[in-house]
Image (cartoon, rainbow, N blue to C red; front, top):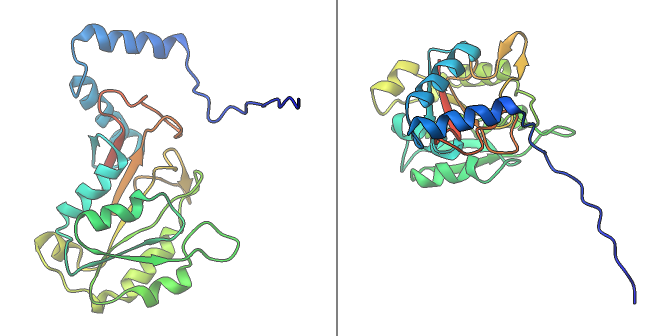
Length: 219
């Protein structure tokens, strides 16, 4: 008989101290086991930390991205570009609102979309781009904005909020990058809209409690 010994490699073990345990106890004793005043406090602290005008908590980062697309009025007949290297949610939310998914492959030796191919992917139907921050590293938003500005003449707004931007809107999938910085700017204060995740394996987790699993920040 051949014995096989399995070695368990911990994957993203949580850093839990008595402080976190005490806060969970307070939440349970408060009588609020869903969205409540602690959620509002969390939203304010996130906005203050990131340096943005507003932060809204939802049940998931997926919900935050879909809500953003719906707020922008994006739907059938529109196109939304995202990275081919990402979690399914970055693309599925585009399908959820009825828009067409346009994938741009990653650049050589990079986890970010190939910016040299992005401009060619933008058409008159393009309403938003969802860049994906990977492993805590923010995308090159300077280049992203340069590209959408260069294609401004192709953009045809369908509603008032799109007319305010009058260009392709950048909505960051920042599930991986809470706390990240690039050129002195924090993740959450660069893109037009930013969606964070607080899943158990992310930089900051809410343990999937009080519906604090995803946050959308608005500049």
